[in-house]
Length: 112
Length: 116
Image 1 (cartoon, rainbow over the protein chains, first blue to last red):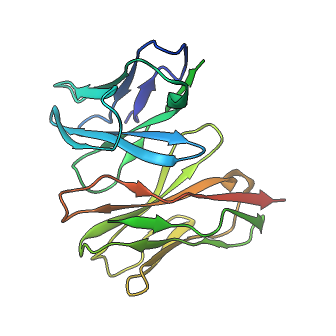
Image 2: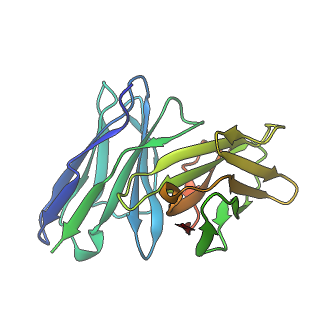
Image 3: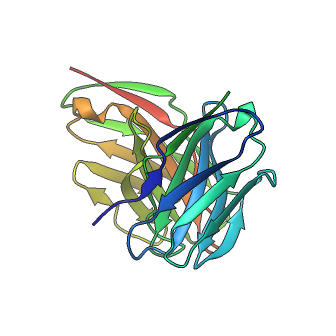
């Protein structure tokens, strides 16, 4: 059974640009959550999608957005990139909204 | 609000020895789940073990066991027979269930170094 797949693995963008990250959950999993990891702030929750609906949102500005498709694949978008957006972005999938959550390898975003 | 505390920023253990990584949590919810993840330098978060608040038995998965003490609100991870490949960051996390299925909240992590 394939795990959680995140693409791309690495990205370098310049300030002001926008970026889209993709996450394919484990087959059959309907819940996808996104987290940002930085050395200073640790792991912070961005948002959660379940059955194409955003169920929870973390304390991030509106430049951060996401969506989930009917096949449970999810994308997150960051517009008008800032240097502080440089981070490892992790996606987690769950069968339901509770229970074990399995993470992908992450997308490492560098904003220059 | 839920909170996870990992008080050990770094730990060293000799190969083949057992090690305990500490985790305490705070929640007012009666129903919650506790998780441990391993993050090697590659960045991937690897799920290790899960304990539900109503589980009476401590969870075990191979060399990993979770020492769950509900009254003390602690959920320590025990790794038996440490291996060099166990060197990584370890994160404790919690998710409340009754409070609308809140997202995972993570501790700051513990960096474990296994010495040959």
